[in-house]
Length: 558
Image 1 (cartoon, rainbow, N blue to C red):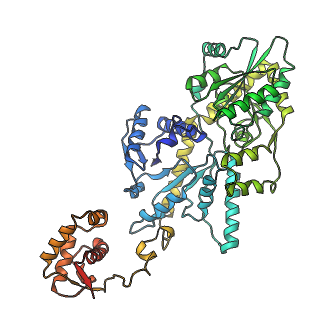
Image 2: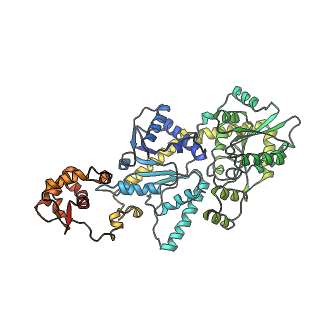
Image 3: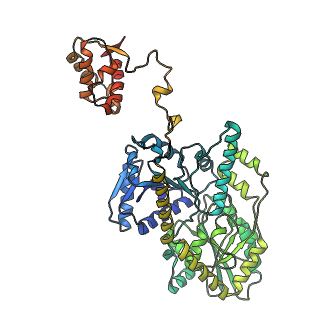
C-alpha cells in the first residue's frame, strides 16, 4: 500500500509570510515522511502541477529516488491506486464529496474508492470548527480518519460533533450518523536536531551573555499574549524564584519567538519590567534557524505556560525534552499527554470558568464583533495558571543541578522513544494500513447514495423546470439543412467562433457529430435512434451533443 500526500507548499513550509504552528508541523512531517516512509513509490495530489514539482524536489532533497506519481483535479479517480490520501487538516468532508462524484465504478460505490486521513491542528477557528461539524453530513466513512494530536483535542472534537449531532436529531430527526475514526497520534519531531555538544552549548551561552552563575530559562514560540501563552504568570513566578536564588546567581529569560507588531512587542517589554524587574530578558528571533539553535543550546530550564484555546498539541515541550531540558509547563491541552509531572519536569495546574460562562464570547465571535484573535484573547484572559506552584517548580530546579540533569535525561529518552518521527511515521502507516483493510472489506456492503453531493447536482436536474422542453431519447428532431454535408460544414464554421469553442471540453468528437447528422438526414427522427450507432459508453454524451447541435440551429425539435 502507498499513501498519497495532498500537497500545497504553504502547508509544509516555515518560510511563508505567516508562520503558524501548523506550518512547522507540516514541514517537520514531510521531512519525517520522506525519511522514514516505507512507500515503494510516492503519490501526490495537487491543485496545481507546479506544486508537484515542489513535492518531487523535497523528496529528492531527502535522498529518495522512488518515482513520484502525480494526481490533479482532472484525474482524481486515480487515487484508487494508492488507496489512502493524507490531508494536512481536519476538513476531509469536501474531499469525501469529491470522492463520491468521481470514484464510482460499475461494481462499487465511489465512497469505497479510497480512504481519507486528516489531522487536527488548531480547532478553535471558525473554519476548523465548521470543517469538523461538516463531518456529520459529509459522506465520510468508517475507513476515513481525522488524527487528533492529543487526548485533549479529541475531547474537544467529540464535543463539537456531539453538539452538532444533537442539533441534527432535534431539527431533522436524524437517526443514523456515520463518522470517521478519531485516533490519537501525537506530532513528531526530529530529535537529532536538538542534540548539542558541550562546545555548542558554551558558545550559545556566551552569545546570550550567560556566565556560569547565570540560570537560563527558555520560552520559545510565537510571542503572542492573546493567541499563544500569556507571559504574566511566567514573569511573576520567575521574579519570586529570583528572590531566593543563591548569592551570586543570576536569572536570564530568553524569549525565542516573534512579535506580530510593535504594539505586542511593547506590551511584553512593559509587562516584564513590571512583573520581573530582577530578571534579565533577552529576545531572539524565532524565525531564524540559527537563533533557535542558540536558544535551545543555551538553556537550563524550559518554560511554556500555554493557556490558549487555539493550542491543541504544543510541540515545544517535546523539543525541549529532546534538548535534554527539564520543563515547566501548564497542565493544558497536549502538554497533559507529553510531559510526565515530576519526571520530565512539572505540569502546573490551570483553572478556567465552568461551561456556560463563555457563551457570550462565542456569540461575539460568530457575529464578527470580535476577530478570531480577540475571541482567543478574551478566552485566555479568563484562564489562570498557578503562579505560586510555578515559582515553587522553578525554585526546586534552580537549587539542584542534579534534578535538572535527571529530569532532562528522562525527558530526552522519552522524546527519542515516543516522539521522534521514526516512531510517529510508523504509527501513521499502521493507521493507513488499517483504513485500507476496513475499506476493502466494506466495498460490497455500502450502498451508493442517490446523489453523492446534493449541493453539486447535475445542472440539468437542478434546473429541470427552467426549459419548455426536455431532451430525451424520445424527443423527435429533424435536420434543418438540405443534407448532412451542408450541416457538417456549417458546424465546422461555427466551431471556429470563440463563443462556441470556449466549451471545447464538453463538445463532441467529429465522428459522433457526423454519425448523428447522418442519422437525421432521412427525415424527423428520435434522439434515441440518432445515437444508436455510437458505442454504448458514449451514448449519454452523444445524446447531450444533440442538444448542442440544436443550439447551433443545425437540428430542430418537433
